[in-house]
Image (cartoon, rainbow, N blue to C red; front, side):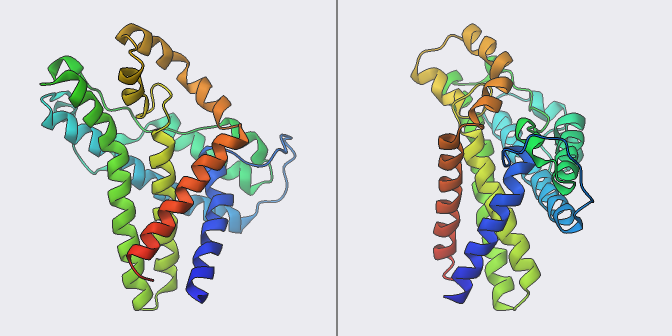
Length: 252
């Protein structure tokens, strides 16, 4: 019972500190800086390292599956690797996320609700796929699937660390699990060019041209969507539910 309460506290704290890192914060949109909060800064940097790992595994999944489906574009560009350098975008994975960390640590987190991050997209040529529709969906879903795999592994590490009474590893693994599952559900939103949209476009019969046109405005659509409390609540509930499911699976 004490462990469950502690898990919930970690989940609540991560929700407060990580979600603003890429998605939202409170509604204080001013730029009133205050003294640096070193606790929030260290927590934000720890979450940032988790995000870099998750992005690496996520993009690796896309590249690996594309190669399995007959498209070697990503392989030829060196993207089937777990080296983070191959998957990092200078602006989307380094500059903007670190800016958000600093903004939150200096009391201007409200501005961060309009900042999102991203990894370097994996280049895919769908004309190389053996079965275009099936393989397009498989490649898109491979990224979120790797998020789930990483979360399962992280929770396993947490279970071992808990048995060894190493609380700092337990907390870090819980944090990684939560962030990985959150980004899994985030990328499954049916908004081009997010992964979920590759399923949506076939369900509603979007032409390739229409889909690509929507991709050009997807960045702005996502920013608007994540300001809607209902959307944020769905993502938070899905993340919390998956965390609790894994928590029960490992019998903490």
